[in-house]
Length: 172
Ligand SMILES: [Zn+2]
Ligand SMILES: [Zn+2]
Image (cartoon, rainbow, N blue to C red; front, top):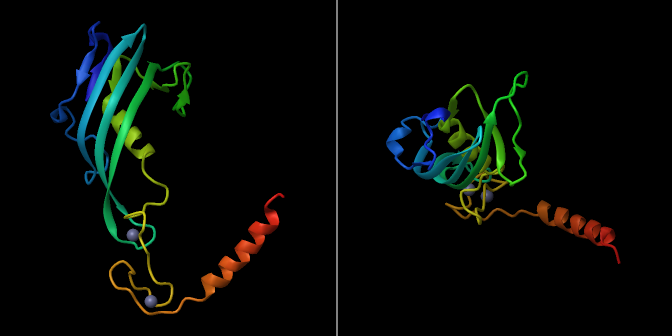
C-alpha cells in the first residue's frame, strides 16, 4: 500500500485492512496476520504508529528443523521528505524516540515499513523453542525427536575449562 502524503486527512488515517497489502513481503512465504497503523501528518513529516503481527518460516539453528516464527512488532516511525543528495539512510532515532525514515516525492510506502519492522524482529540465532536440544554431535540425530545414548564427554572438559577461566576473570 502506497499513501499519498498530500492526501492524508488532518484527523489522520487508520490502516487496518489486510486486503490493502496483497504482497507486503518480497518473500511470499511470509504472512502478514494483522495490523493496526495510524498515519498522521506533522508538518511535512508523517508519523506512523501502531502494531503488526506476521509469521515467518525459519530454520532452527540448533536442530535444523523448519518452524514458524511469530513476529509482534510495535511500530513507531517518523518519515521526513528525503533530502536531496542523500541516498538510503540507516535508521536513526529522533528526539521523540521514533525511528527516522524517509519518503520520496509524495509517496510513502507502507509495505516497505512493514517489511523493515518485521526483519528487525527476526532472531539472529533462530530456535524452534527455547529448550531445543539440538543435534547430537556424535550420531547427528535430532535429540528432540529421538533421545540417543551417545556419550558426550568433550563438552564436559570444555565446560570445566570455561569455569576455571571464569573464576580467574571474576574480580574479587
Ligand atoms: Zn530446534
Ligand atoms: Zn547421538
